[in-house]
Length: 315
Image 1: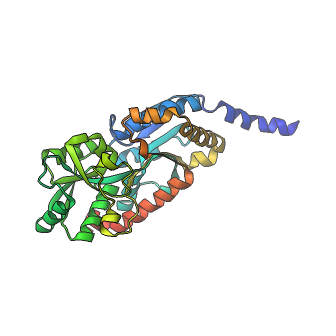
Image 2: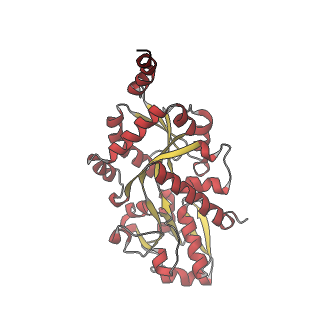
Image 3: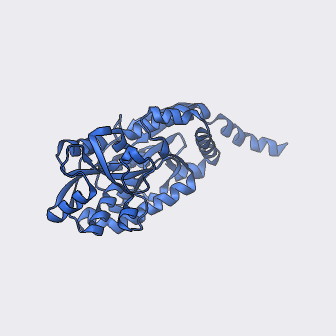
């Protein structure tokens, strides 16, 4: 009898969670790719979880502002999550350590994996990869990127190392501006998450993918950098995922179990793909990942960041 009585509070806590909305920090601006991805995924997840999600947008300092707010001001009670782009945002910590311990949060739910790509404006005089490399050996080419510490930026620097072409990265703050920079000729070409390149349609032409080209003609059948130059680089991915305070996991394992279970159940719902595509997501990039997959990717980004830090910072 006493055992049942002792267990009752824990059972009640688990069964009543969540009893209010879940707040989600998004460290980029409203209306961008992360926002669309978030809304598509949570439109299904909220049914599994039995509550709604309330996003808060905190752009600034390449995502750093949002993480500092999340880790510094949000309660670690499993009612506060962060929805980040693991690739560029974890690279931030390799460039400059945050005010918090990077192990004080973890990603538990990956939504997609989206390789970076090199692309030119449709009217650019640089129409082939050979054009880019040849011109880059003659002069320094200005290259747009959404932010310096980005997997696509590392892909571009790797290309320079492999070919001897000279590239100057220019952060243009966000995907729309990075596409516009290439289209208008503000920069010679740009590198960016390939999903955003696909969304730009015929206004751009893709010449190289920093990972496997899973979509073929949608990226102009551009080759993988490893295949094109006989390299052995990891895929340079943007990868959006939900994260949570480690303390929330430790203090409320029952709540965390509900989150992870319903997150996976969302991937098993056939309506998710429809919602993802309606949110301008590329279906081939919708890709479930749990705690282990996210941890592995986080570690890989930290390793890549340390390796390429001198090229990204001039150190």
